[in-house]
Length: 212
Image (cartoon, rainbow, N blue to C red):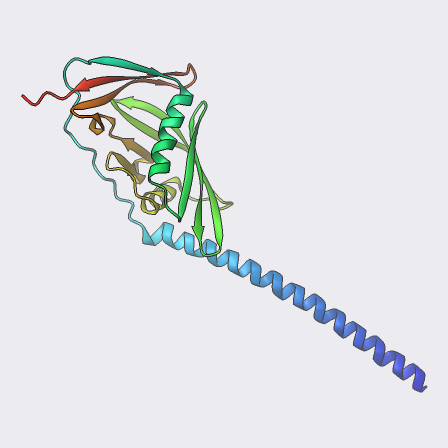
C-alpha cells in the first residue's frame, strides 16, 4: 500500500511537472505572438490615423520649354541604378528600400518598428506626363496584412524624406516625379520622352533654362 501510494504521488508529480513545461512553452509562444500583434496594431494605427493622406500639388512652372540641347538614351538597368543611387543618398534607419525594374517598377523594403522589421512591396506602372513621370500603383503588400493601397502610400509618404521633386499622392494612388524641376547641372533640366519597359526603351531630353 505504501509503495502504491508513493508511485501514485510520483506519477502525479511527473504529470504536474510536464504540465508546467507545456504551460511555460504556451506562455512563451503567446508572449511572442502578442509582441508581433502589438507591432501590427501599431503599424495599423499609424497607417489609418497618424499619417496625412493629402496630396501635394505638383509645381506648375515648366523649366524645360524651348528646344532640347540633346537626348539621353538609357535602358532599364541604367534607370534602376540611377534611382537606387538617389535612394541610398537619402537612406534612414527606420525605412530601407530599393527599386528593381522589369515589366514594372517594383519597390521593396523593410520598415523597422520596435524589435521587428516589416517587409513591404509596391509595384508601379510608369507613364510620361508633360515631361514628368507618373508611377501608377498596381500592387501592394505590407507583410501579410491586406491594406488599402491608399493607406500604404500614406505610410510610405510619412516614413521617409524624399526630394522635393518626388510627390507622394495617396488619394490618386500614385507617385508624381517632377522631373522637369530637377537641375542636373547649372540651368540644365531633364524632360522624360519615353519610358517603355517591355521594349527596354527609356529616353530623356536635356534643356537649358532661358532666363530672358
